[in-house]
Image (cartoon, rainbow, N blue to C red; front, side, top):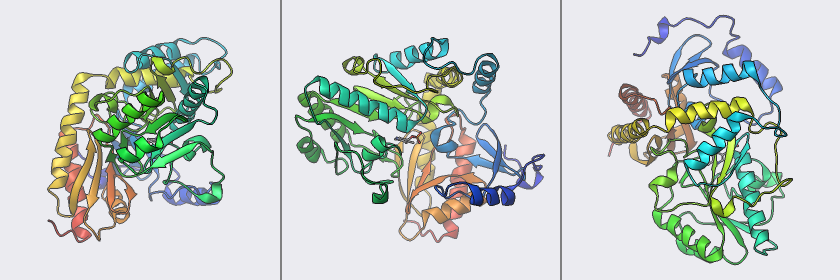
Length: 412
Ligand SMILES: *Cc1c(COP(=O)(O)O)cnc(C)c1O
């Protein structure tokens, strides 16, 4: 199943890492630290660099390529639609967006959908929904409450709702009206929510901070205080949604049902698209003129998302996500150097023994042909395509084990 890396052939016409890197260093804003590889092609769970070397991808473009790279159904949806009609704006009707909105609403909260082009924009829409809903209840200065370890995006609203990660005071001032409490602290949450609260905005599983599952107690407390205050409970399912945790939406495996969810990442199978999906309580909050986006809801992105949902919203695939997630975690937990795993389904955080530097392990794994991500100094994050198979899971566990031994894993 795994090609010998030495037997692969270079990609015709590819510039190669050295030349790509030189241009990147000269012309791109310095906002990203990149892994030392120039990817030129993807197929299923594999990526290929300019030299033709094969990599097993356990990051999937940060949980975007959940059907694997260049899934035939997504490629067909995109290419056929691109050849027929690419864009007309939201001033007219197009079929794919209406079918996708129906599908998202019927698969979740039953209300209305606003489309956009990214995760951060989906949260911007949710913030507008929450504030408008609050103004409708006579609240002049609405507040949105979140847990401290959350990540909601990089635009100013979403960043203002991101209490710690990505926070840089040199980018200030941030927006008023955002409050945070310590993770999973139900008491602090109860104390922070009151008559001015528009919404509680939470990730059911914190992704960017290293895969931390929000406790059931905290989720239930959030539901309760929102009900008491008349506020909206918003789940950011940008990373957890679209099957990642083994159900279409992560909230399905929790005891609570939110009023609004936001989606992006895997929704478009690689095409940029985000969505803010409401239940009945929030469906009518936004009215003409309140929000919009030129690119949003375009037929290519929404058509791709329909193809993604056709494949992901399948009980057999979702069962396999739960089973393979359990296999992955069981394998990892046997490895010397691993102190534990966190997550649900195929969203897995791997906690490393003290003294092992996760970013160094991540760089070493890339050299060994395994793509992962390290969101913290002691954590590896694994987000493989949902179509991964048991052999690929075992291979990744084996590679991580080999790497950890090099970094001085002692075992428990
Ligand atoms: C990735 C992510 C976002 C931001 O999405 P972008 O598409 O990068 O704007 C927001 N919330 C969560 C939970 C995410 O994982």
